[in-house]
Length: 126
Length: 142
Image: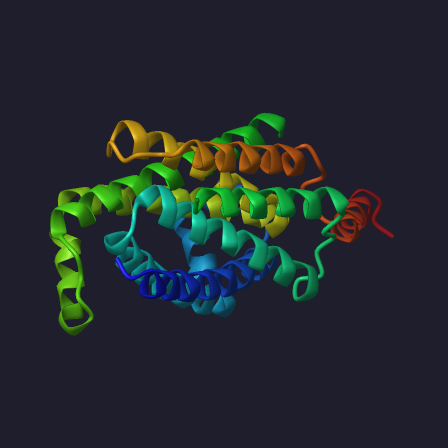
């Protein structure tokens, strides 16, 4: 299979799912602890809280788009390459966005872990 | 609380890895998708493997949202990274794909990275302080 085609599908997948992750994380922080809401107000009310959050809906659209990219990429390459490669590149991309967009405290421990995953990805494509 | 964190981590990891492998199994039986016949991708939604894979990914999504509601994104994401380990094992023993020693080494490094983050704090300090202050105010009304 043409590696350029495969990697452009993976690239689109990474960008879409990182954006989705950031949006979902911001949305869930606004809503608050889901377990607490479910116990207090019930499952349906919890789902209502989630689907009324605009950030969640935009994030979901990004994730749906990335899901179609994933299906396409999986039909072009091995699952043990496509799934880990795209997901861990997403991890690096999201860590950078979490630091600068969500202002999360990405400390040395988390950067080292990001680096380990990055090297892990390089090994996965061998 | 500790048990809840471990349970969510395992649910996120297992559902993610298993879901991906089931999707791959389904797409294999569907055949390659050509860009000029891209609408064939909709056949995927009547394939039992794909449906099962989507159910697993739905379970993953619920666990993931719950985790995001009380932890940092950079803390929850490594849990999804544990899914690669599940994917590698299932690819080898269920899909019978060849997984090279290099890929196993990659899986090992990713696992180390996950272990490192999982041992750290789950929420950014600033937010912990805000939560603690809010809790304090509730206990001691002015």
